[in-house]
Amino acid sequence: MRVVVACGNGMGTSQIMKMKAKKVFKKLDIAIDIDHMSIGQAKTAAKDYDVVICSEALTSNFNITNNKTKLIGLKNLLSEAEMEEKIKETLDI
Image (cartoon, rainbow, N blue to C red; front, side):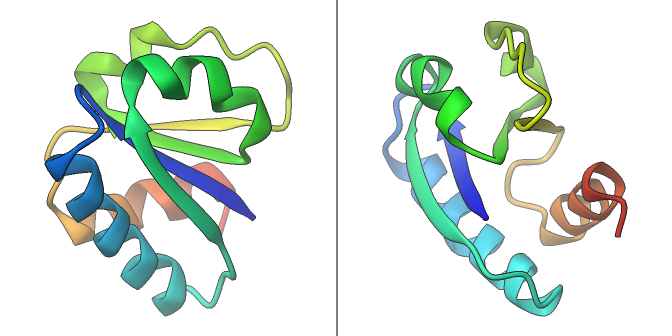
């Protein structure tokens, strides 16, 4: 499964989100290939990923028209518990 995490600039916050997402997906026993980038980059690249994770406030930047890509918006970008809950909900686990 290909996953991308995105923040405003694609620097610090998305790197931390990437580490947390790796832990959560590992806990859920889901193998992933994960990248991090800015919202601008992710907006263009989203179609190439199965899951896009970003802030709830930034989800409106995405216009995902395929049935393959799932968009997850988080209120607290650093909460593993929220991330796990939303991943389970979005992927029907």
